[in-house]
Length: 105
Image (tube, rainbow, N blue to C red; front, side, top):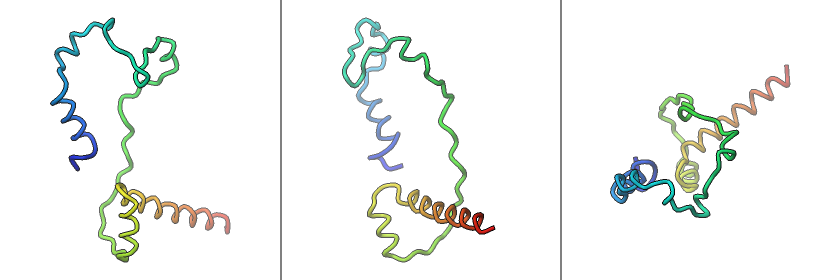
């Protein structure tokens, strides 16, 4: 994983800079609230949903795909996640053709 992005960079920084023992010992009355981290009431959580984890993303198959250099460079120029965007374009093309085929029947 890229060390500048994602969980590994964040977790590493948090582990190195956080005094977890001091934080665990801090009484609730001494917690500082800010605009970014306001105090909440039980009523604020009344409609909250509990999740046991993130949904599992659909399985993907790795393939070798030949595309024109200019097409690949354009997608890469859009930034991180270019392969996901390429997949989304292919999915939209497929969906449009599935809909149009269904309308013709």
